[in-house]
Length: 117
Image 1 (cartoon, rainbow, N blue to C red):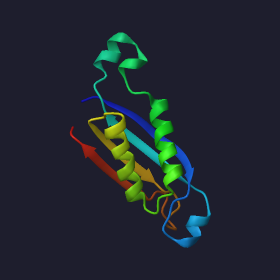
Image 2: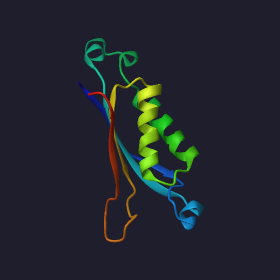
Image 3: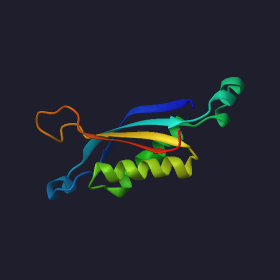
Image 4: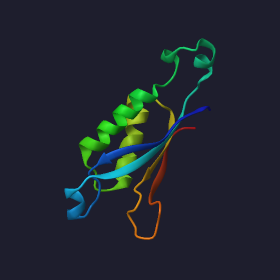
């Protein structure tokens, strides 16, 4: 299976379980690896035959901003459901990075895989 990816999508949002986190905007960084057969687009050179990075980034950003998640685990799960259901992607890997969430650690987050490879 081919993979189309969108990495380091920065989204400013409310994220966190602590009361003080619910009062501020933080940035999460989203990496998406999406299973997709690109053979048709590779021949046609037509956007209609592949996934639109723009449409996916808009949909993921809207979801994250609107939902105001408490947990990155829930955020990753809902992003994967969006990709599988609304974009008909058969498999995805979603990585959420909440940089600075733990003192002394540069990166903190989760990685999940959903669907069938």
